[in-house]
Image (cartoon, rainbow, N blue to C red):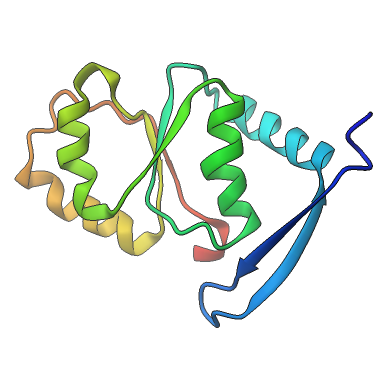
Length: 132
């Protein structure tokens, strides 16, 4: 594996303590994790993630950037208050999954009744593991 020696360094922040720290992984590990998640979630070039989480941890960067892009799709980064209006505006080019914490998930569900969501087809909701 030609990527096993390439080391990536990420400056991340603990969401609760706001403590900054350095996280490292090899490019090979990041690519393998991205391909594995993409395969397990059955993502394709048609899938677009709507990211509602800050990228403060390596896990967030993996799920919000590397997984969608390496599966051929893409990522839209936005705030929860724009989720439904944006989904309505996208129409056929809709986001098919989103990544959000429990609090944001509740906000999205609470505000769904205020919007025409009949054309929206979400097939995956990802919640970060530190929220469990």
